[in-house]
Image (cartoon, rainbow, N blue to C red; front, side):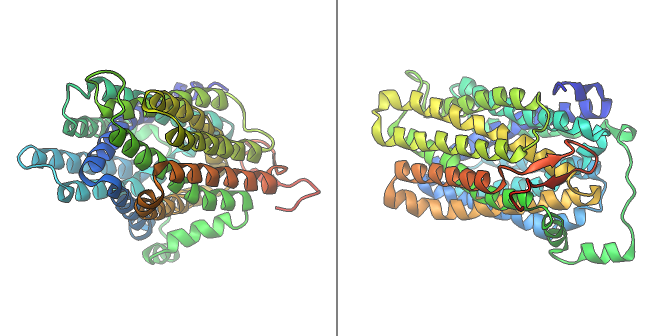
Length: 438
């Protein structure tokens, strides 16, 4: 099934149009935020990313558990509007006072925390929008392609405008995209299939207890060892990936003064690396997304881990061995290789999360996944600044790439023979080959 086929559904087309706009804004914000943080804090910018991860984690643990019982569409709209307000307030303050870490931190924390409400709500809505479970792989590929397109177009926009537009106004553009996203989600209205609210006293008591939502997700994944390993290892992988792409790479580019051409500035060079990552990300998404879920999805998922790790390791080798004139092209090429691994993991894993669990558990499982990934990001970014100081960016990046390769190798050895049967059925189950237990 083509990844464009879901757009024939009006609700999916409406949600997608908003997310396409918002995803580009997210990338403008991400690149600008990292660049500001590196300029103000150097290697200590990792601590800002750690704080962001902590904010997302806290929101998922202490706020998101109630959000499962809310209307998911309204949750998404509110999250978009609040993020736009926070960013516009930051831009207004920065226009009248010198930019400082004290201004940057609350903005980054507020935007990160609201992500813990938006993403699980989106994951819970998608199966209802798709209707037919067989359409879920294409639907996931379509929405995943949105982020891949943004990873290409966002940095390209930053690179093209970096010499014209002040960095602060990439935040302004992000706020505008959040407003557009909220408007698009709002237009879905009655076109979105309704769900029955969980209003029993027992459910209400469960949601009122701190951590109940995480326990619910943990209970759901306990019976699915492949998902459990994917969530746990995903936390480590996410932390290592962020250390490389959002700390070590911009730090090296800034310190070594890399630029695409005379007068382009180092921000343009960093945008070029991220755009290279985004271009291959998108191309791989189109290949993976146009194929049905494989009979043995673990092979695709963990091969993707290995490809990602290899690309990052090559970035570390380039930092250690190459002179300045060759370093930027090498970083772009290695980033492209690493990017090919992302869709190989993300698309099949998202489909498994949405088809292996009861509809009421999907948001809880997604929240557990977010807790794992944000915990990994938090730990990685706390550990990274002293490690970068002690061993240098090249050694740290090599170690991160090697760690991700190891995650993929262990996953392939343990779950490679695991088959999914029947593929994309309404309630598929994981069944192992007779020679191996899950």
